[in-house]
Image 1 (spheres, rainbow, N blue to C red):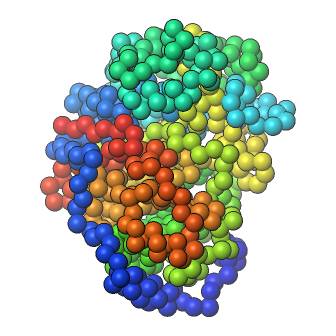
Image 2: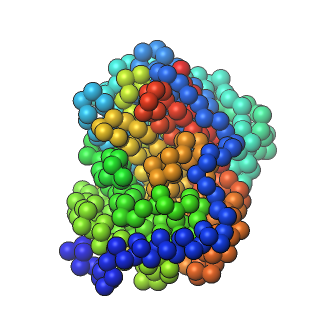
Image 3: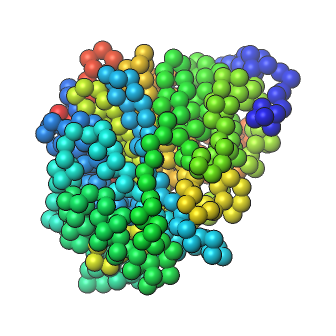
Length: 561
C-alpha cells in the first residue's frame, strides 16, 4: 500500500549512484572542501572509564553522575538527571510536561521505550479551536508517570534518593546562565502576565539576569511530595487537586479524572540498520520512525566517498530527509488511535524505492510541498539527555513542555509550569485532536548498537530540526568516524519548503554550488540555537571508555567518572 503512493523512477538506484559520484567528483575537483580530519571544537570531549551523563545543563549531568557513583544504574541516573534538568532548564521541560525514553540493557540484549507523552483531556470535544497558550492549551502531563514507571520497573534505588539532587536545586537555587537569562528576557511580557511565573523569573518586576540565583521553593515542595508519595501525589493526590483548581479558574480542560486516568506506556522502539549498525529509536507517536527511515534511504548511497561539507552529500541528505519527514507527516500518530505501518515504512524494499526517486543533480519538486513540517512556530525548546552506566546499559530520553515556558501558566503554590502540547495536534488527518489521544511530535532519542553492543546514545531538542539533526549526527559518527563532539559541532542544515536553512560555516564553494543547483539558502547564526542542542555519548569500541559531547548551541555539559 505504501509503495503505491510513490512512483519509482525508470532509472535504477545504481545509475543514480554513479551519476552522484561523478557529480561529486567534478565538484571536489574544482572546490577545496572540508576533509574528515578532526576539527577544533568549542567544547571538549569528556572521557570516563565507568559511567557518564550528557545533558543540557552541567548541574543535571552532575546529578546523574552522583546517582551512578552511589551505585545506581543507567535508569536511576537518567531519572535523577531528568528531574534535575526540569529544575535548571525550566523553560524547556519539567514535571508539567512529557517525554519519551529509549533504553537498552546490555546483558539481556533488551531494548524498550517508555512513552510518557501528554494526552488530550476528555473535554476536548467541546474545544472550538486549539489555543497555543493558556490553560486550555495544556494536555495531561506525563513526566512524573514516565520517570517513576521507569525507576520502579528498571531502576535500583528508591525514588526519594534519585530525586534528592532536583529537590536541592529547586530549594537552594542555582546560577542563571546567559542562555536562560536571554530566554527569560525574550519572554518577559508573557512571564510578567502570570503572577506565579513572574514571582520566580521576574522578581521585583525585572527579569533575572545571568549570574542571579533562581530559586523555586514551591517546586521543591512539590518534588518532595512526589519523592515521598510517588506518582499518585501528582495524579490523584494533592498536586492533582491543585492542577484541577487551576484549570477551573483559568478555563483549562484537564480534570482530576483526566489526571487519575493517565498512564505511561511501555512500547517497542522502532529499529533499523545503517552501515551494519543497529538503530533503536523512539516509536510513534514521535519521530524515531522518520530518523530510521531517513538513514535506511541513505544506506543505499556511499556517503563516505563524499566530503562531509560537499554539496553532493548535503543534497543527498536533504532529499532523504524530505522523504522521511513526508512519511512521518502522512502516517505517524498515536498508535492507539490509528494504524501506523511501521514495518512497511522501515522495510529494505521501501528504502530502496525511496532512494531510487532521488536525482543527484536536481531538487525533487514533487516532495517539497508536503515534506518538511510547517508549524506556526519553530521553537527550539525541549531537552535531551543520555546516560551510560558502568555495565554498559544505555538510556536516551527527550522531554519537553513544548514551547519555551509551555502554556505560560504556573500552577499556584506548586512551582509547576504547564505544557502547551495541545498545539501539536493537527487540524485534520491522522494527528487530529481526540479525547485521550497523544499528539505527534518530532522527539527522537536514539541508541546505536554495533554487534549488539551499545555504541552511542543521542538526542536533541529543536522542534522540526530534530528529524534532520539526528540523522546528520548518525552520519557524522558512522560515515566519517567523527568524535562525538566534532559530530555535534559540525554545521547543520534544515530543509523548509523550497528553502534550506544553514549555519554560516559552510565553505563558500559549497554555498555557491547549492545555489546553482536551485536551493534558496537562508543563513542563520553560527552555532544557532535554532538547530537545537544535541547531547551524546559513544562507547569507544577499543577501550570501552565512555566519550561524551555536548552542544555549544545550548548550555550542554557532560559529566563522568
